[in-house]
Image 1 (tube, rainbow, N blue to C red):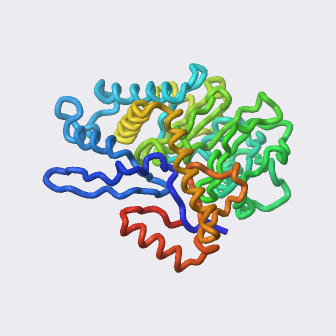
Image 2: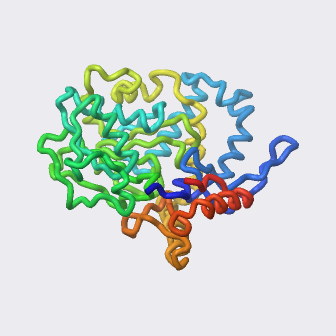
Length: 364
């Protein structure tokens, strides 16, 4: 069953500030609360700052006009990296890479960068649609072992009610990496603790696209963390990869240069023309996060807001229902629910009336 109505990955940005009026020249527009899965809502404060800077950021030049090799842009570029390292407490053992292509490009890049031959094995947790897509893509470049259900077809409808349980995992003995999706957008499930492999030497790879910078995590426990920016860190166009430096020498010789983490790291993510405006916007949002108080405050806000919504659902006498019945598996980023067990007409009415009230992106 596919949940019918979604709330945002970016739930911590969907607040009353999003209903403010922005002055754009002599015109004004009312900002709607965007609960969409992505591109998701951006804080009004960040949008206003970008608006002020758009025509003239440095000496009369817009960011979108800057050469990616200019001193003006490099200051933006490296400041964004520094702020991300500070916010997430990224240790010196890890590189931060800015890429293009969206998080889905990393479905291939992970296998290519961590498997020198096609005989390498990647252990994958199949927890929903995004981990299914990742495992299918990886099969082009390595062998894939589904740790939670090797014998069954890749049926993601099995994971509506809860996340797969670690005690059920069956790992391969020769895995090159262990991969899982930390938050399954469509299913509304999320792991709230780091998963580990039976072999502590196997690097852990997480797709953090939809819960990136939503809470503090211990980056040192992961070999690779990747996320598209359009969920929680700004507009589409930027993909962030955090990779442990000792893993940069494991790539297949057929890895394209634009997907080769070592090549990009050696060039400080300026191997080619970077997505300059997306990086600039991410930098603004990272500064906003720091002003807010960092990820500890962001996590508290996410918990408060998601708990409030789940409380309404669970105490509605069945009018609303959440298909994720395992409370420990419920996502703080994507609150999925049905109305009267999936009454399509009522759900369509809910989405339509929410739009009238300036709430968009709620339809599943």
